[in-house]
Length: 321
Image (cartoon, rainbow, N blue to C red; front, side):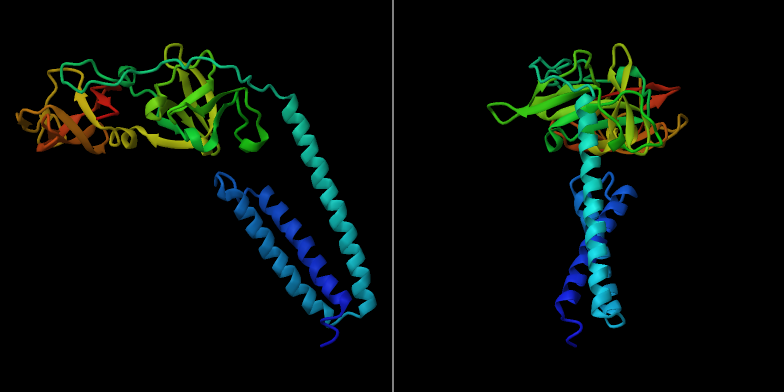
């Protein structure tokens, strides 16, 4: 029993834990155990380090009963030297990465005025549509940045799809802040920014998504010039067009001749109920199941409408009530 609690043995347990913890955390990080997990990513990597470290203690306890104290002391020195060398290696690697980040182009924090600010929509049926995705659902969905969770939304140039987001450097960004009324605002926006929606006093910033990768999304950053850029998927939420449209406040027909159908096909009977707005409930391919609402947002009935046809949108939508 004395052999297990000898000073050399206790040192062996401690060094085995430290060595295995560092190696476990490093390997977990390289394998992407915490990638795309937001703030939980660091905890996941540390968790793997602790598990491997505990395994190292168990292995050390088993070895102590077979090894002499002199051998244990020699192993302690080896573990100590290897651990120190490994920590020096990690420190040097971190310093090199920091220097590279300093050399990469960084956005200046000059104050500018955000572009493409939308006015609060009027949901009267006679009003102009709030948005119709430029009358075409080009792309595959939308991206909503987590505005205040990250503080800065980074934009990237052409990406290497076989490399992780940590191996890329941003080319520009939007820097967020809070105004005197505790509403989101910006201290810097790129001069070319004209997203699908930008109304920060309502916490709304939406980009049209043209492509999806493992770590990055290809987004349209200027809907007038069709300029594109790339964003880290972990910095917000990606929604397909059906998911996005079923989350909006209401939809309206672009063409006044459009009809509400009893079933999702053209030959179905139409519904002639008078209504003011339509609340999206379900989307099946080109068809949308909606609740028909009056001015007081009371449900008058339900039916099917064609939300897109031949690649063109048949509806506009409103984000706000």
